[in-house]
Amino acid sequence: MTEPAICRSIAALRDTLKPARMADERIAMVPTMGALHEGHLSLVRRARQEADRVVVSIFVNPTQFAPTEDFDAYPRTEERDVELLRTLGVEAVFAPSVGEMYPAGFATGVSVGGPSVGLESDFRPHFFNGVAVVVTKLLLAALPDVAVFGEKDYQQLCVVRRMALDLNLPTRIVGAETVREADGLAMSSRNVYLSPDERRTAALIQTVLTEAATAIGDGGDAGAILAAGRERLAAAGFRVDYLELRDADTLAAVTAGTASRRLLVAAWLGRTRLIDNIAV
Ligand code: PAF
Image 1 (cartoon, rainbow, N blue to C red):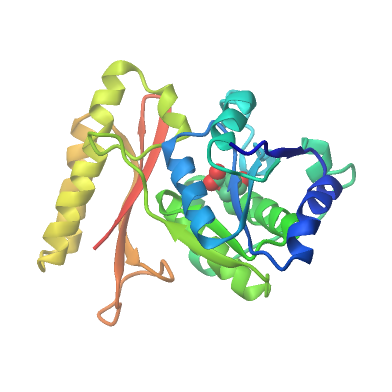
Image 2: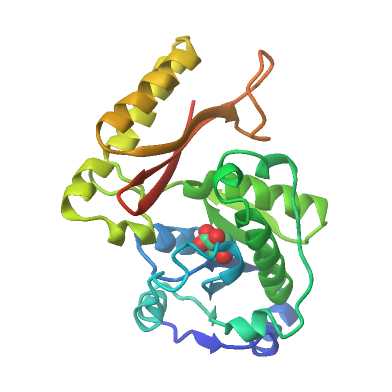
């Protein structure tokens, strides 16, 4: 068991990481919004494989929520989160206040084009500007050698990769596989919002993805397969934002020359929005 240092300020985080940096040890960061579940813990284990020291950030970032979204309701379970991280040998938890991250007068944005166009942005236009600014700030605060992000938020992973490349951030971005419940539902902090009935229905999202990916991979007509997938989800009670096939690296529309493809979905079940994706 390691007692993680709880750092509330960027200065405290930098002080905590200084000895590791002086000793030329490798530092990995896992940015999170807390409410940790097995999916996050798998990211931490991956970070541990990639580096000597691991820092996890816990920060519910207001700039990636629209005023109509669940910023206030988002689960906040810091004590339990730190307890879980203690068992994984995490050196530091960076848990700043909103004021530390966004001091009065904050007036800077980070805007990424390319992979942020479409999909999530069509339904949550504020989202990637919020993610880009906070991830830039988190990476500049910790200056990790590696940062680990879940493939569950596949578009976010592509956007962060593009941004790190474009801004020459000195951090290698690693994507880690999605962790699933026994019935295939991708783990998410928002799954707690699902009623028992919705929770049973929610697993269909992965069934539809898997079957559509296989059918498209076998050479089927993607347009027809995706339309059938959307209908199947709607018939089960989902309100589908998108079910789309994209270039797996750029998230651009698929063409005859596309080397690898990714199928991405976002759909509402009651008041819970679920996202998932799969390689094709
Ligand atoms: O994926 C998340 O939990 C968040 O979007 C992130 C990357 C921690 C930024 O707030």
